[in-house]
Each structure stands twice: as structure tokens, then as C-alpha cells.
Length: 393
Image (cartoon, rainbow, N blue to C red; front, side, top):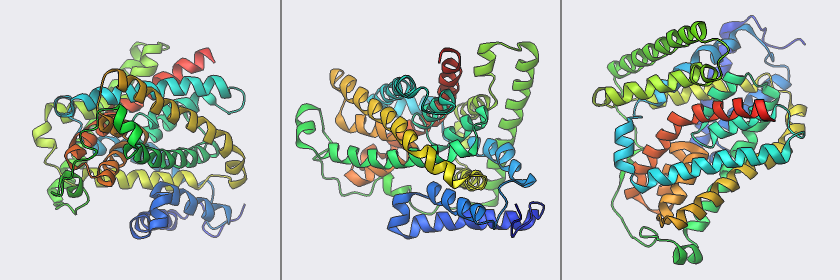
């Protein structure tokens, strides 16, 4: 198909990709309706509109660069503060509640797979991606998607379903937090606390001073992490080919995550001083979102979306129900349970948003930490679930 921009016009393609990514971020931060849709969905919609109206090609040599290089680079940049000991030390019961929510996600993935088997294409891979996404967040969604090579025509409606269900679940979590019945039957020490002081939640929305040294150090750490992951991956593949354990633990994105956490834990005092790494990593993920929207066939997206909405809903509701039931038995605070569910479904930004929305500033830092921990374990869990379901479904 002839398009306005040639597949070989690399600079023009990249100009549109980066400008479109910037536009989606600007819209999300400027308009309430755009914030409700979310930046990732906006990036996808803009890209799909450009390719389906023959302005940009659905395929081009330059698109592969995004998945091959930018996504791996984004992971260590987003995990600069994933210090294992700090996360375990500072989150208390919320750390336990988070793992209950993760268990709910895995259980939901298995349940959704059993109920919808035969109705969803590549169902094991879909379960893997959504396990990663509903344990960590977008970074894990894309890492597992790249690991299993799921087509854009399935990835795009899945991402739309993911964001739609996540947005709906946040509204449910906010409603539960203010519900008198839940506050009577659960410990809720923060639900009625009036804390007017500015806490760490508000601090996260401020501009950060970023120097050239920050950018240089952040990228240096990221490239070293990726190089170590590639060397380990090649060594394991040569030494233990065809092993199931190597298929999971030797997965490139799992290794990148492992080395990222290792760097953040062993050199935490140095790495945590690097500003701007999360912003750069987040921007790279937005670019990737835009790029995977370009090959998407809109009729195929519309055809696949409804059943994927059901798949994501089963997973999210199982997560919530399991968390509330086990959390009640263990007498965990309602706020910790709700923040844990939001952290699994949407990552640190969503957990932080819940603390801001409900006026729990003292819980903002633990919410961010458990969300970051989700980034660490999400990819591994997604790959494990995917590989196991491939063998048994």
C-alpha cells in the first residue's frame, strides 16, 4: 500500500513518532478527558489513525529499532530505585499484601485461561503478558510481549482492554476506601485521618533538577546492565540449551530486570542519586507504544477487544477478591490492601495516584516502593506463567 511517508524515509518517520509521542504526553497532562483515556492509549490511537489512513506505513525497517533497543534500555532506567532491602524494610505489611495481590493475579490468569480457552488467540501468551502487567506495570507488559513475539493485532486491543479495566478498577478501589461497610469490617486507620501536610505523594509531581551528569550516569548504568544480561543470556543458551529453567531464567528481559535490581541494591546510595532516569525510561516506553500502534489493523482490534476485556476483568476481579479475603484473615489494614491491588494493576503511578486521591500522604512512599518491586518480579512471573500454560493448555 502506498503511504504519504515512505517506509525508507527514516528521519521523517522518526519525526512523526517522537512528535506523536510528545503529543500524547502533552494531552494526558493538559486535558482531563485525555488523562482518563491515559497517555498510552492516546499514543496507540494516534499511531493507529496515522497508519490506517495511509499517512505512515504499517511496516518500516526503522520500527524494529524500538523493540530491539529502546525497550531493553527503558527497563534499567525505570528500576534505578529498586533496592530490594529498602523495599522490604520500608513497606511492612504492605509488602505482604502486595504479594497476596500478585497471587490473585496469577490465580486470575489461570482462571481466565481455563474459562476462555478456545475464544482467545495465543491465550497462553495473553495470560503471560497480563500476569506481567497486573503484577508490575507497562514495562513488564512490553517486556513479556517482546519475549513471546505476540502480534500487534493482538497486543493493541489487549493494551486497550488492560487500560480500560485498570481505570475501572481504580474507581472501584476508591469507592471501597470510602465505603462504610468495608471500614467497619477492616482495620482502616488512615481512612479517617486528616493530614494536611504536604507529603511525598505531592513531591513526586514536581519538576526534578536533572543535570548532564545524571543523564550520562543513568544511561551508563543502563547500557552496562543490558550488556551483562546479553552476556549471561548467550552463556546460558550455549551451555543449557532446551532447558525449561533456562527458557525462564535465561530470558533476556528477566536477566535485564535481575541485573537492574542487583545494581540498585548493591550500589543503591550511588544509583538513587541519579535524577531523570524514570522520566527517560517512561518516555522510551511511550515511544514503543506509538511504534506498536503503527502496524495495527483497526478492524482486527475491534474484533479482538471484547473478549480481551472479559479476560482482563476476570484477572483484575480475582486479584481484588483474593486480596480482600486473605487480607481480612491476616487483619491487614484496608489501605494497604487497596494500595497493593492498585500497585499490581497499574504500577507505582497508579498506587501513588490512589494515595493522593484518598489523602494518605504517609502511605505514598511505601506505595511507590511496592510498585517498583512489582516491576522487578512482573516480567519473571509473566514468563513463568506463559511457559507453563503453553505446556498444559
